[in-house]
Length: 139
Image (cartoon, rainbow, N blue to C red; front, side, top):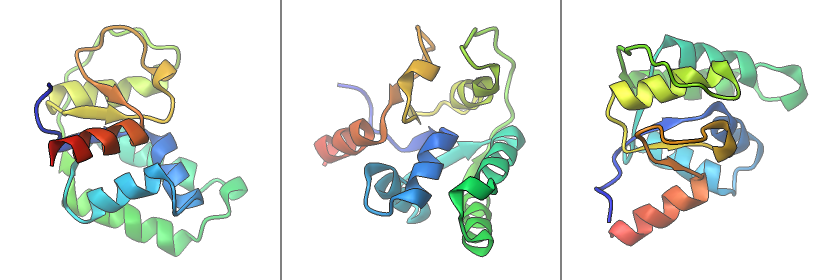
């Protein structure tokens, strides 16, 4: 079995889903991060994407709530200095998540859409539900 999961990278779609459905697996993952049970790894590109996407009017999120969560994620998480990668992804904007996961030695990259991260990337790509199942199995 794989090693214990402690350090993760969150794809933006997981964060959006956590805000939109407070009862789903993405929200449970965010709760673990905010409680300090999982360490979130990020760089400035990821923080910028989180802020930009969560501010989109179609989500109708409360700016103060978004700001507070992003502030806590940045304060409690770990900023990673990345090395560039030649990985080819369907969406080049997703490269930041792979680079942070690899450079920061993340235990998992958590995404609601694993198809965004095809092939052999040298990191585990897990759905929020799969992450929760792995964490439960580790207990």
